[in-house]
Amino acid sequence: LAVAEFLAAQPAVQWVKYAGLPDSPYYGLAQKYLPRGAGGVLTFGIRGGQAAGVRFIESAQFLSHLANVGDAKSLVIHPASTTHRQLNEEEQANAGVTPDMIRISVGLETLEDILWDIEQALARSQSE
View 1: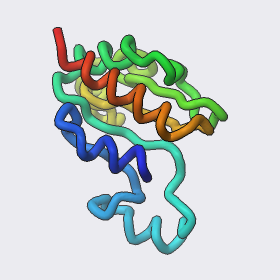
View 2: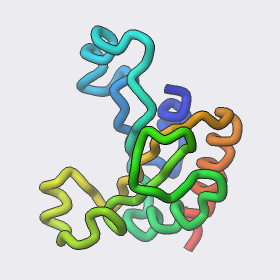
View 3: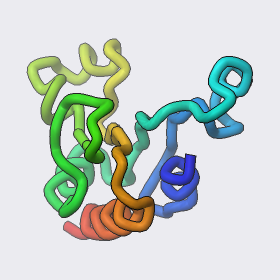
């Protein structure tokens, strides 16, 4: 939840999808069925589209760039340029993937380290 709230407050972030946030359409269900938290996977939209998404991934120093989720270490991926790159933009949209989307799977590192890396990668993603 702390990572989602942090991202939602960042100017370089357009949107955050996480069931634990009150503005999520799944918030009520998450509160009912996941009272101890909505999990460690979330997505967000980065300002600047695909190019900014790629810069964010390349700038991450602490987060690992891997496609799996639920690992002990924090993982980050830009689906449009990796796992879904073989699809055209329409097919990606049909699969729920947008050019600005970043997925994070939060691991067991300290929150301070995770937020530091996200913050510096966001800053670098916004410079061309």
